[in-house]
Length: 284
Image (tube, rainbow, N blue to C red; front, side, top):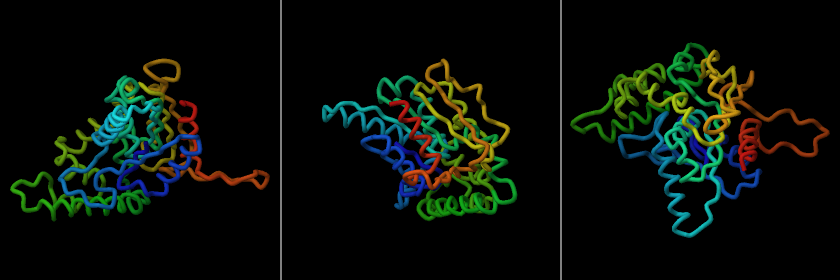
């Protein structure tokens, strides 16, 4: 089961790349969840999804379990993967489930790609001037403001608006937008409260399935000084947590390695998804 990133969707090139990588390991089925409002159809409820919104993945897992029971099917192992925001949602969900992930849902492994870990630490990096703000932040904000505008158009006549429309539309950073829109819509006391209650670093110690975390030191969205390897549990704890950080790769920028002329065939998927699939294959 694949969980995509902020304002991405199941049709993105990375989701397709990841799905192909997992299918190549021999998995019979790969599913990708579209977070609410990301499938191409506008979401006509006030809410949608956020960094710690685990309702949809938990609902999906429960539906799968009930369907398996209803058809008297054999419960096959389930594996989770996610990138960026989706990786945070995945780890938080596993932390919430704890041992139930294995006992009730037969989840046997998970892989996180460019995991946020601590959104409060990362916020200054995501919004810093330069290429981050000009390319990444501005594009994300443009998409998020479209969501905000849709909510205003849909619910603007309501007696009480749950967010600050004008401040959200004037946001210059993701944190500004989170403070004006996401936090009030979901009942958090501002952006910092939202980050502290949803960041995956606070849920890692409860994860009970083998998990890979694959990040890059030069990821422009993340604090390069923070990668808590002390939380890695390769030789104990509830389940092994393998934490890997490469020197290069940026944010979801691991691409195809150079294929030499002597190799018999070209690689079909890029390096990041291949490593995630390799870990999942190891868990099988």
